[in-house]
Structures are given as C-alpha cells and as structure tokens.
Image (cartoon, rainbow, N blue to C red; front, side):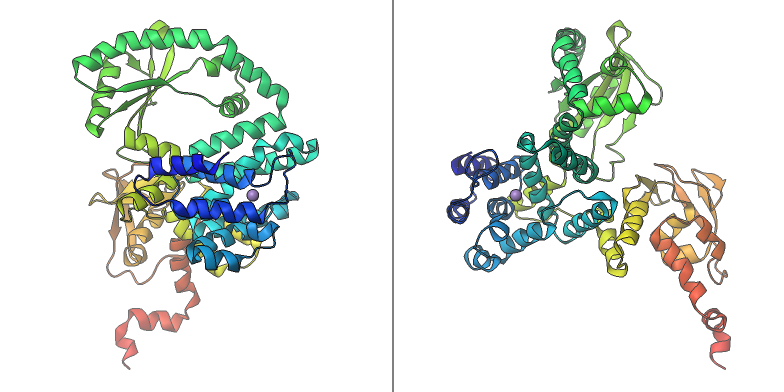
Length: 489
Ligand code: MN
C-alpha cells in the first residue's frame, strides 16, 4: 500500500479538498514506526496505511483518515499524543487518543467481553469516528490472522463476531460487517467455509447466471417501456450469512441458496414504487414478504423496498429496490453521513436516538455489568416505529407498550394516560405495539399521578423513570402537588 493510493481514493470522495495533511501524517508515522516490522515480515507502516485506505473506502472524512495513519503511534513508538496534537491539531489528536483508549483488546471470557463492549459504546457515544478507525484497524489485523497461533486466531475471530460485527451492523456499515464476518467464519470453521465457498462460487455459478439472464430478459423490456432508468444486479450473498441461515432454520444449503436475490437501482423514490408495480404485475408476490423500508426506514436509517415473488420456473426471487443514494447509505451507513457533512459543508448528521441513550445511561451507571445489561435491554433490542395521530414518527424498542409511547410523546400525556386507541380500535395500555401502528392516547385531565402498576410492563427507561419519580415523593408532597388548595394553607 502506498500513500499516493490513499490520497487518490480520498480525493475521489472529496473532490477539491486539500489532502496534503495525509502526506505529512504518513512521513511522521513512517518515521515513528521505522524500526518495527509486522508478524508477516512487512514494515509496520503497512498496517496504518491499510487502515487508512479502508477508511477512505467507507468515505471517512480527512481527520479520520489522518488519524487512521497515526493510530498506533502513541501506543507503539516513542512519539507521544502531545507531539500529534502540536503537529496535527486537537481534532486529530482526540481521535487518535480515542482509538488508543480502546486499547489492544483481547478476548478473556465474559467479564472482559463486557468491559470491551462498554468501551466501544462509550467511544461511540463521544465520537463515532473513533469506532470507524477501530473497525478498519481490526479488519486489517484480521487479514493477517493466519500468521497467529490457532488458539489466538480463534479468540480474535470470536471476539470480532460477538462485538465488532454486530456494532458495525447497528451503524449500518454493512461493507465492514460482511468482510469481518467472512474472515472470522473462515478462521473459526475452515471446513464449513471452504465447503460453502465451493458450492456457491463453483457449483452454482452457472445456474445463477442463467437465471439472471432469464429474469432480465422478461423484466427489462417492461422497465424500458415505462421509461425507467435502472441498473439491475445479482446480490452477492456473503458466506457467513448463508451459514447462519442454515443454522437458524436447520435448512439445507440448496433451500437457502435457491432463493435468488436481485437488486434494482433507479433514480427516484417514485421510480422505486413504479418498479415494484411492474414486478408485481409480472410475477405473483409471496404473501407477507413485502416490506416498505422507504416509508418506514429501519432504525439505522436503512431504506429500500423489499419483495419476494414467485419468479420464472416458480423460483422464489427476492428483490431490493432503491435509489442510488439509499444504496450508498446501505453500504457505508453512518460513516457516509460524515462524508455528506464535509462534502457540502453542512451538518446533516444526527446520532440515532440509541446513541444518545447510551450517553444518558452511561451518566448514571457505574458498574460494567449493569451497564451492559441496560444496554442490552434498551439498545440491542430491535426497534419499532409507531405514529402519533398527527403523523409524527416515534422510535421505540420492540415490545414497547402504549405507556412507553405516551411518555415518549410527553411526560404529561404519560402521567395522565387513561386509555389508548391503536389503529382506530380501542386497545389496552399494556399491549405490545407493532411496527407501523397508529397510536392515540386518551388522557384523563383529573388523573393525579401515574399508576405504579405500569412498571410491570413499561419498557423504556424514560417511562419507567417518570413513573418511579412519583413513588419516591412522599404522599404529602404528592397531595400538595396535585391539590394546590392544600399547598396554600
Ligand atoms: Mn492498529
């Protein structure tokens, strides 16, 4: 890897931006690491170079790529963080410090695992870019995994699958997630990996191509008739996901493989729905498999239309339909937001609610195991979206109830909740809400305070805290609060 290649790639994503700081950082890092070599015999500088290159691939900004070049300097050389701060400024120094703090993570059982998870989340909450660097650092280290003793290989692979890959998924950086997963899969189950690789790459390739052309020959005349501009491609399925599906449902490779997956990219949202209409006219859709992630995006921002149809020869075929912008987003996830921000000089990035929640949880909880438990309860759970009567969207954890919704809207709505209407029908305050529900809370103005029994089913921290607040106050205080007449006496 050469620095010129990194600069070139960076400038492809950020045309016109001055990238000379990358050359300076390279000279500095090369000099600092000059006497070190990697386990595979390469000069050490190759590792930060590759890390920085991976960062340009996920469209990271200039400070992040620069910090990628410098990330091992304070830890492994006699140059310090202070040197970096003086030479490159405090933004870059802070990023490097963040990566250094995450430290050299080793997998040592569950306690260590929790500790690492906590560190990752805290780093993420302070600046997501630290996590991008750590991910690229890890991905490059994985590529030289084979040199390590088998035990160590397994440990690193295990940890990557348990901590790094899921977080990359949460952040929507699928590109990194898949790459990490396939390398780890190979390290942990080499025989399974090679077996699937052979089946997928060799045995099924011809069949896959034949079917692709068949579908294309039916679909493209219709798309052209509708004057749609489109690209259509076979979706690459990574081997670890095939393996997981086989495990989950105890199915055979052929059953999973035979689900044929295609992606269509069109210019506008309108075109997405038009394309969907054309597909559903040509082939019969499979019931309950249509998902509109454009109207209701996934929590990490993912957007697309998904449908499964009975295609030619009765073959089950999955379609993803999306715009180019949605496509980029699905590959680069949150890392691409930084790109947009810097490119246009305006901030369109907003941390997802769950990242903000981490900061909140972190403020009040001190022990690691409790922290992780909370995180798992509140964050790792899948999220749902429900709508208020005004059409506002609220993000809630899966399993949330109308009480959680009420408190998400407003504390007063929660405190005074008396009933609920879900999708135009009278519902119960403790029922589980589903994605896409329309929820209207009926309030009782005279109701003095929330019902302690709600704690039995309220899921969100916000709702639970608000309900508990009332329990803590003395009865007299509560009476005073709600019967102002007494207060004055
Ligand atoms: Mn490193």
